[in-house]
Length: 111
Length: 111
Image (tube, rainbow over all chains, first blue to last red; front, side, top):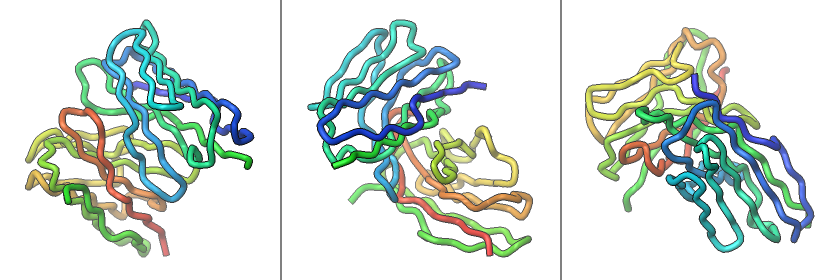
């Protein structure tokens, strides 16, 4: 079945440093979604990318969707303590609305 | 306010007992999902339903059952056949697999 992997599994950064997480799917995706889960909370939708090679920005967050629609990345510039949490990518395979989540990257910030 | 309500927040199961987790949404979404999250891990799909009176198995359906008699409700039963039920259970809904909205989750533990 479809597998979605993320690296790294954990990332510890000093406040103000940049952070990147990478997402790779075993199958081509019709779209890729990103979610953030704060400690003790539930996942919250951040963004959806649909087009091959698409890049979207939300303030300090930059999201990319690969040309082959099998990989994606999330980059945070100048991290802040509010960025703490686990970031998940998720995507459905073509013709299938079952959404498979990546393994997640847990970000911790050292003040 | 529109949203997804999961109850209870905490649930304890005795050996051999079936327990049911409630999930209700007033977002008028057709699709609903159940995910399981183990500590420090990603979300794994248990069951999903795209329309009333229909549902499909996810990746880890064994030991679980669901029903979808009403659009608003998608209860999950953890049966005695599920030998390792301790986990955080998340219910979600969406329109056509886009942008999942999650409930606040139920933490299930075994006595």
